[in-house]
Amino acid sequence: MDASDEIGVTDGYIVVFSVGWVVRGAKTGQDAINIAVSEVGKRVGSTGNQVRTVDISVQRIGCNSCGIGSDALLLVSETALVGLFLEIEVDAEDSETAEKIARREVGPHLHNTPLTSVDIAPAD
Image (tube, rainbow, N blue to C red; front, side):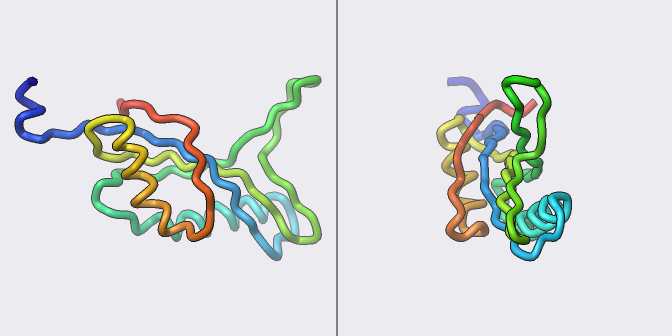
C-alpha cells in the first residue's frame, strides 16, 4: 500500500457509454444530431461531484465494402434515432468503480435510456 492509498486519493477514469437517442420532429439528419446532442447535454450537465466532465459525440458507422463512414443516424418520417457516445471522466479507485459511478451519476438524467459500456480507461 502506498501513501496515496492511505489518504484515500482517487484516480480519474474515462467511461464511454453508447446511447441511442430518439428525436421527434427533425427535418434533416443534421437537425436530429443537433437536437440529440443538445437534449442529452442539458440532461447530463447537472451530474454529481464525482463526475469531472461529460463529452458527447456522434457515433460513426463504417461501410465494410467502400470504407466510407457516416454518422450513426436513422431518420424516418421526422423521427430519428441518433447514436451517441458519452465520455464521462470520473474520480474512482478502479475501473469497475468508475463504471458504477458513471452509471449512478448519469443514468438517472437519461430516464429509460440504456447505457452500454464500450470502454473504460485511466484518464491522462
